[in-house]
Image (tube, rainbow over all chains, first blue to last red; front, side, top):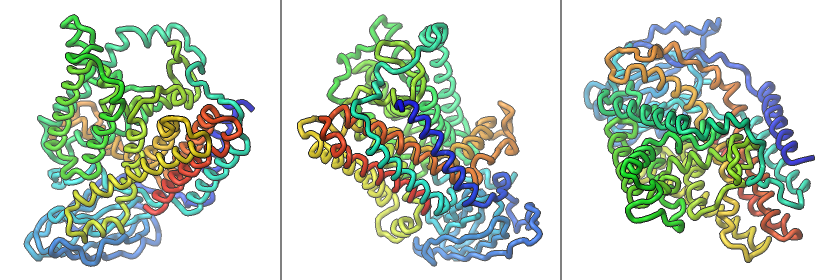
Length: 143
Length: 446
């Protein structure tokens, strides 16, 4: 077998193997088009993906004080289409940003709390950050 | 749509991370990589076969003539100048908000799209596009001087790719660590400084400066080696297999460092998304910039050190009289690095690439639609849905691994005496398996 022929064989076999695995391994999820960010206020939470049994809403809380996050940054797994409610308290006023969905909330006064509501309708892992203290608060894994 | 458009981007482009690759898929990739590695040892060939310098089938002569013609080369230069002029316009005249296309152009379309993907497909495209090279060349021609001759003479060969490795390190630091790295102000200063240094370098040492010291050109040339379109040593433009160009490479000092920066920085980007590392950074008394810089240097240092160590062990087991073994084996890291880059940045390229094209229609943020791409409905995500993305990522990493070990095997056969060739390549095989399993682990644990 010549080298170039061998390379071609390898190039064919590897994708096939990967393809087979994916067919059996991962369910096809229907990710909808990337976030056309829902408007700022409490989301008009009608999950556009027409699943008959909409997942229960999820509430995530975090607090920022003295440049530290409580609880320490962790990842929350939520199913695709879940209405998500965030409650973030910060000792300094400023922006809270849900990356990827590009949704923002403002903590309007020092020690204040901001609520952010959105529907997790795009698959991926998204960071929620406090821009004023440059801290990652938590990640939301949507799948 | 809403007020978030006025936001200042504190961080990099994007913010959507990939879901972890399913365990079965990561395992399948790992097993494939291991099996292919051992098959390669069993099914070894006794003589080097790649012969990149002479491999390839000549393209039709009209095509070769076109590629050589001044009009063709000039057209590329114009495209490069226009693209950079557009980007500079957006960076200087546009508002510093997330809707400004500058950061997306730099980190997605240029860094991933042009230097990695387009180069691997078409060859060293940035060499043709690089507006700094164009400026120096045209200026020298205007002054009736040879562009290869700088004011101090020619680029000294002993410097090799070291300056490029350093410039690349500066860029990946900006990309992964730099505060306000998506801000147009930051990018104006960084690229302004880069252009000034590059032009001074080329003025002093001639156009070979770009070939060796411009990190972007060097990266484009390295990944461009994977292209099926290339040039044999006799100058004939040919179609060839993707390893021929790497086998043909002239090996110069600093090559290992350059490839290590590329592989290590991509690995760090995956590693730094890990929450354990985020919490270390956020609970440290040191600023994030400092811990991030230390982390980046540690990962790049790990790649360089393990590679040099493996090369040294190859020498001990194979034939210890050979000089510069790490450099000899360095080309086999290029496909591995490319596999990493593709796996890691694929979704960024597809998603943020499209979003950048949308933003490009309105560089000033005044609602205009220059290219008719200014609607978000333009963005399509079918290539990054989890069911497509995960298999693609594993495929990229494993394919890079396979190409890397074929190249390393051939190199070992060429370098070492016949009876030592198998054991002489074992350390190299081992270190590549480590990189590939590490890459899969990063995809799995992200």
